[in-house]
Amino acid sequence: MDQASQSIVNSFVQANVYGIYVTTLILCLRWLLFQDESLKRREKLNIPMLIISIVVFLLETAGLATCFQTTLELQDANSQGFKTLNTINSAVEYTTLQIVDAVLIYRCWVVYGYSWKIVLLPLFLWISSVVLSSYDLSLYVLDLNTTDPDTAARINVLSLQIWDGFFACNIAINIYATTAIVYRIVSVMKDSINPSNRLSQTWRIIAESGALYTISTIVNLVATVLIGNDAMNNSYNLFQLTADPINFTMAGIAFNLILIRVGQQRVADQNKSSVNKRSQWLSTLRFRNARATEKTSSQDPSTLHSNTDYQDV
Image (cartoon, rainbow, N blue to C red; front, top):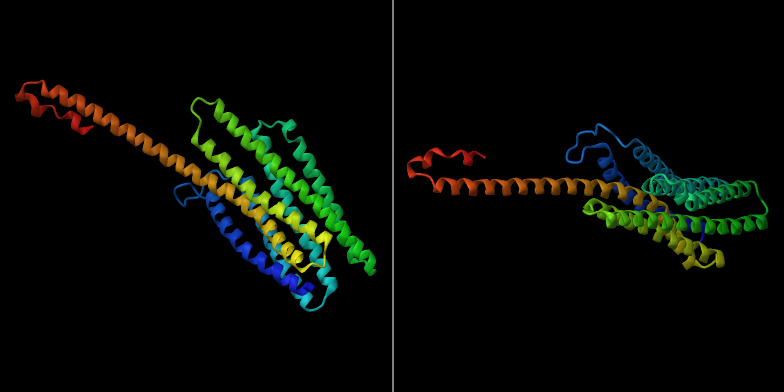
């Protein structure tokens, strides 16, 4: 499979997954910008999450745009243009994954009462991933100015090894932070006399979204390792061309899903609370009616019609 065909496959997969991402983004913005049970704008916006959502959207869109442009450059046999766009695309992908990882680490930090001790390991892994990505991008820039085929081949092999290290850090961050958050929430529930249903739903939401993102990253890591071992295998190439755009876009999808499902759960809890209050009110009404009926039945029949106040309750 030549590079042009590979780029077409990559663009096709990324465009399809991007459509799913945009759908989740629209729903995410609905919960961030508008009130829970109406389309009135929220008085108090979650500005940090709103900004991050927009930044991730811009990066996801830039990734898709560069992917399409890369395909066009290869159709025109413009190798230098391909290398430039490939460098930009890698920078966009690295940045997106690191932003999503940083938000996850921040959530872990908040859940544990701003304890730095808890997030030391994921912070170290995150910094390591930044160093690896920076080094890899420097290799991409070096490759732009290289005309020697042997040097370019060595750079490509080293770049794949860096990708392996980056994905390993990414997976470790997600497993550690997600597990830590879930453990903390479950511990709070066990220590509570009346554990909140929202807490129960929250840890499930975080676990499911984290698993979705982590699994896609593991699959991408496996694909990258296989390519490193046998770059000429068309099956491995097709596997990697499918896994990489899915993993890249899944970072944004998982981020949006957490905000969407938390918003939906908030409304469900409010509705449940409203139903409980109404049930309590109806129970009180029946109790008062029963007492009033008992009282009037013991009165003189001539006064029965005058005692109807209980009916207005």
